[in-house]
Image (cartoon, rainbow, N blue to C red; front, side, top):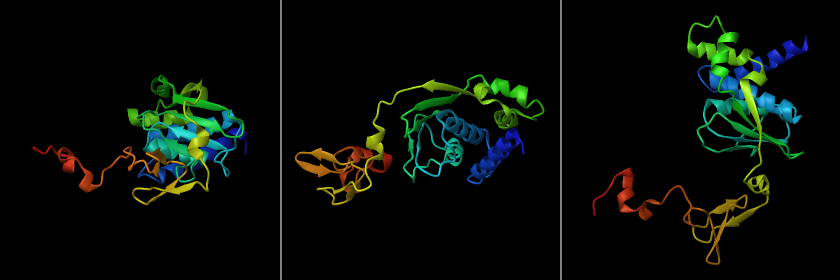
Length: 213
C-alpha cells in the first residue's frame, strides 16, 4: 500500500466513524476530520491521539465537532476539548508538549474550488461532500498563527482540585470556585450561573414569559 493509499484509507475510516454519530456523512464532518488530521500533521503529533498531547478549542458544536473528535481523539469528556460557541467552523489546536498552536479555518474559496474536484456531483451538497474529501489541505484550509487570551493551564486545572460551595453545599471541581465575601462559592451561587432555582426566578422570567406585576 502506498503512502497516498494508506492516507486515503485512514480518512475513509475516520469519516465512517464520524458518520456513525449521524444518519449520514455531511460536508461539515469531512471538514472536521480533515482539519483534525491536518492539525496533527502541522504540530507533529500522531492523531487520533492515545495520550493527551493535543488540546482543541472548537468554535461551534454539531457535526463539525464530531469530525474533529474522531480525527484528533480530543473530546470534552477527556478534557482535551473546549467548546467556545462562536458559531464558526474553526478551531485552535495546541501541542501541550511544545506550546505550539495553530488556528485553522476553511478557505472561503473552498466551496468554489469543490467544482474542480467533484465535477461529476449531482448537486451543490454532494459537490461539497466529495470536493472537501479530494481537495489538498493547503487549498481547503487557511492556517493562522495565534496566541491564547486565556490560560490553558487554568482550564485543565488539577485532578485533585475540589472544594465545597459554602451556600449550596455542592462540590466544585477543577478550581472553578468563586471567592466572595470571605466564602467559597460555586458560580451559580456567586451570581454567575446560567440558571436560577425556580423560587429565585424574577417574576418577569418565569417560563420565559413576561409577567405583569
